[in-house]
Image (cartoon, rainbow, N blue to C red; front, side, top):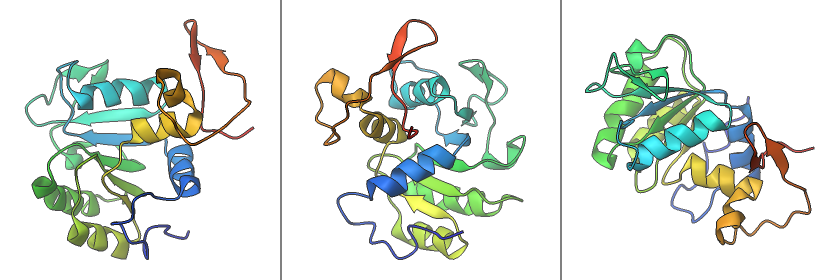
Length: 183
């Protein structure tokens, strides 16, 4: 498998849409490090959003370990995950990112993606992950990227720079929902 970020300059303004779409399409399981139990916190909002889009998300937070968030059991650290995951999403500060990347690289099965949330970047940690064959995205939010690529973000008046004539599909509970899947 090719690693789309190995030779990518992470300081660039935007990752290629096709790369982000591919990562979000292939990802099924996510460990969200820094998950909060406070519904006003961005990490809780992103957790809820990703779950609503069909991702299997495990919240990771040592202070909440043993509890549940949105019906998902919380684990203390990445080593406590019940099985392999496709993506580690880091919702912590840049100072904590390097140690979390090292934790992810110590897992028995490496994640395919390490995604650092908005404002989070650690170029040295990214280089270590990429050297191990893991794709890295920094300073981006998967919720925002999913919404932008699906066209959902335009419903709130944000210009996604993507034009589509696709009709939204009425989803599960009377909510219109677009997807990043082609077809």
